Image (tube, rainbow, N blue to C red; front, side, top):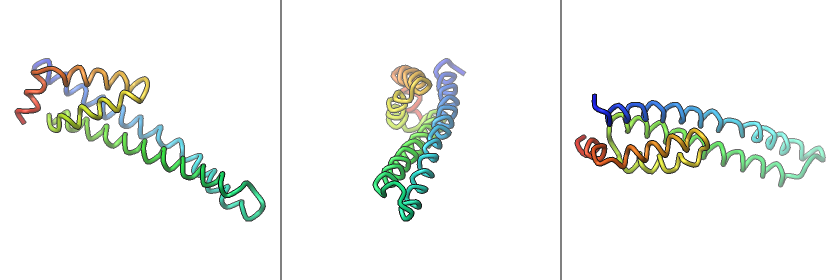
Amino acid sequence: MNKDEEHLKLLSIFHYVVGGIAGFFSCFPIIHLIMGIAMLAETSRGGPSVFFGLIFVMLALTFITLGWTLAICMIISGRRLARRKCYKFCFAIACVSCLLMPHGTVLGVFTIIVLMRPSVKELFAAT
């Protein structure tokens, strides 16, 4: 196994790990979702307005959906790195993962560095 293949294998594993971490932390807004639903249920008893309940629900659903989508894309990118397929998709996810500080940033930068090598581009082209 040469150096590029070893680096791609390690990056693939780390994409799985960071994807799992991102998926886990994307579950935290479920607390806000439950609070928003509770606010909507309490509006008939003179509780907070419907507006605040809807804000909690909509923001929570947005953050959960975006987080889970990113986590799934990270895991798919890890799988494609292992199979050396979809170079542009892997590169795009590496760029987006730089937004997840600190683990995603480190992983994204190292993935971009490895994917920019001409020998790695040849590995993706060969399959």
